[in-house]
Image (cartoon, rainbow, N blue to C red; front, side, top):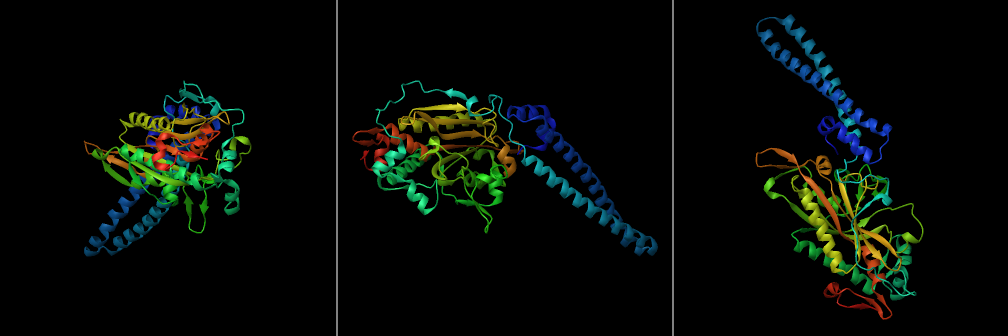
Length: 426
């Protein structure tokens, strides 16, 4: 979340940033509410400090007055101390109320977009940052979408997943399961070769962890919740992996910290129907390899560019046509300062499919998590956090199946063959 001090000293910048996210004048009132609540908190704190100081002063005089034989004055001071104790208790309660209200308000304010983020209300206003300039693959008239290829070659089974769990939970079979495993292995190998430490995190997290990276309260409705244990199934490995360093003060020399992790991911993804969400286009459980970096604020945008290069390299190796979009203010995630989306071209569907988001959150997540570092001058600062999908597999599989289909079967990209052990699904 944003720091109160930043909101106070950069109020115009905050308002302009929220306007880029298409906030209305009514919604923007929260900025004034935050400043007013913080003023109240400071006022109560000053009064509380003065009350505690006076109580302590009077308490110290009681024993001395008794020694001097001034029992009446000592008794009067005792009564004053009792009154001040009650006043302090009331002020402490008011302090907790102000702090709770302030935190609630801050949790409702999204990150401020980077200056390069374009204005816009939704996906149609995203900016093409890097276009695909080569010819797009063209298939024969009888080419099939991936969900029909899956049935023909027994790659995955959505109906079986519905039987076992419900809609949106595919079951991969045979060579389809091996292809899925090969992609995970390939992505993890590339990440570790790039210097990322591999992590196998839990698949469920507590409230503090989900709040730390911004899933709560913003995305509560999209997460699967285990009520009995008060735990959430993770929507991405970003959540547990980034939180490894929650409530931590790092040394500047430790930065950057580079982490990668493979996990299944769980998202409700409710409310969408039609051909554009058929097959693997939108599912409730999917595999993904995530890359996370914790970085010095002065280097985080250079790091973001290096993460874009990493994801580009994966797609180049898989020989998939792709483009990179810079998301507009109206389409960007709640916690992000700048996000780039990667889309691959699905030849049978003749449409672009999102397969990765790479984002810089600046200090938004680290402020929630109290993730800090001590610089060369021994000053403690908030770190910057970044993450990216490298990559999300469901739509990668969809594009690979469709783009590489031939009359003889589906050709496996050469780079994956050492991991699959076969060069064709037939």
